[in-house]
Image (tube, rainbow, N blue to C red):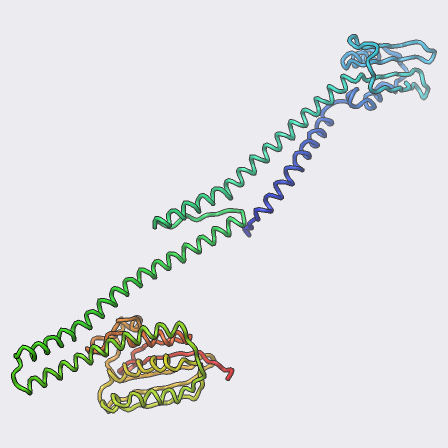
Length: 447
């Protein structure tokens, strides 16, 4: 069953209508019930009462008829006269406490018929005071019933407002206080009022987002601490070695020129290592900035790959590697610097871990929605447990794929740059040997 919510305006309108209509309806039902439950009243309903006396049978005048008429006259304090056709007064009654000059509010004259012939005339008068008392009594009962209905509706409305407006708002307030105190999650809140329910849903969504942001902040703080520790460690190691070599030269520990040259060579190597680490940090920070302010241009993929291979010509020739390319021609919307850096890091990773005289395959092809680049090396592969985390900063795939100059930022930069283009990168271990990196980029067919 559909659980519909009512707007607060609708609830107020319905309550206002009920406050006007229900008391009147209840009063009308009460009066109808009273009319059906009571016998004809000689004051409130004179016509119905007279009908019982103006149709008489052959036994009239009778003592029983006269007795009934007298009982009603005395009980209701009525002024009644019955005059025969010859002018004789057959019955006369005037209330004992009614003065002669008292105003008669209503007077009636009826003919008493016997066998279709008028045999007498009944004069009937209602004094004003009994009628007023009876009417006031009826009005008082109806007014009491109306007031009771109004009070009942007010209490019902207040209960409804408390249960579906005040109580949910109090729960929301308590939940907000718990959030400021970083306590447990708030309990679920339900209301039939549309606005309150929408407010509750907005609060629940806000609370979920706050929890997500808090978890992300905790993770970022953890990554930041780990990042700083790793950077400090990786910079301190070559700095410590450089300091030792220079102290050996300056303090005279190293005496021969050959040994001094050897120490200077090692010092220069450590300086280059620190420069490489700082360059990686600089590239990482620059990548973070550019991915937030990315501007793409139409870029053919084949010239980009050829330029990339040429820029890495020295390490490729140094290990006598063979680069095999099979690239489908296509033009993509790319930020050339970011994409060149991303592909360079992936290809450098493949060169670094490929054996001498090995082969690196670069394939590129398109499907209906994406352009796919696949780079495969013949190195030792990646530890299976680290395949899902290899693109996180400072995560290194495998001890056998690490060198002293690598701190785990290259693939993180690649993943970041590719994601800024709406693409994805994933790593797999090849069936025989080596690792395969698959880069998926969205197609732009409106060229």
